[in-house]
Length: 276
Picture 1 (cartoon, rainbow, N blue to C red):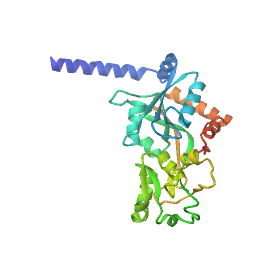
Picture 2 (cartoon, one colour):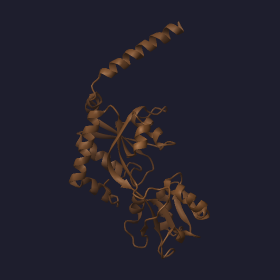
Picture 3 (cartoon, helix red, strand yellow):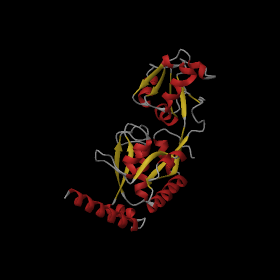
Picture 4 (cartoon, rainbow, N blue to C red):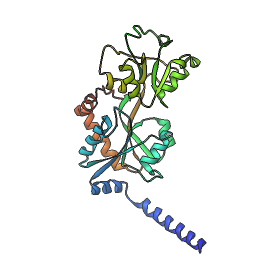
């Protein structure tokens, strides 16, 4: 009986897949319209983009949903071990714990290698270029000519971050004793603001959202061998076969950018948008 059931199951699965292959590409968009809601995946604890239901990506998700004539349903989720995990859990398959997938995921690196590794996903519509910057307390570090100015200083970084990786590895670890690791970049920046650190290495948007141009905490461009000077673009991700959904979202992003609404969304959180 087990063999017969297994065979019957395989037949049903094969038939279902053949039927799904015949469904037009806009079928998922039709289902989304019927539901009346756009499900958008955003990262947890990721200020200034998405944290406790507020942030740049939350506002952007709301604006995109409005452009599509839908209400917004947020699916906040914790970052996985890598981006492949996040795309699988939140875009095309769903998490084994039962949440996801969403209709759309925000803040995905628009990277050719990432695209090649995730053929089930379409990554598109870059809306911001992120870069790593150093912010320093001018009273503690009056001059900054090179990274050597950090010798003997305490520098905060976020755990498991690009900033932490490059700083800990710089110069065969010569700055390691001065590195202080925090749960988030915002935590590190608040410690700097409180006078408990000399500097912080973090994403420019994170720094801007906390200090908002305070001259006592200037930003510095710091070169690292393993870090792209030009930064990296972030955009949207949907399932590969959601072609109509992708087309509509791209058009919506174009409208938000051309109208200045995207710039205004970033500005509300103290961040200057950098167009790709």
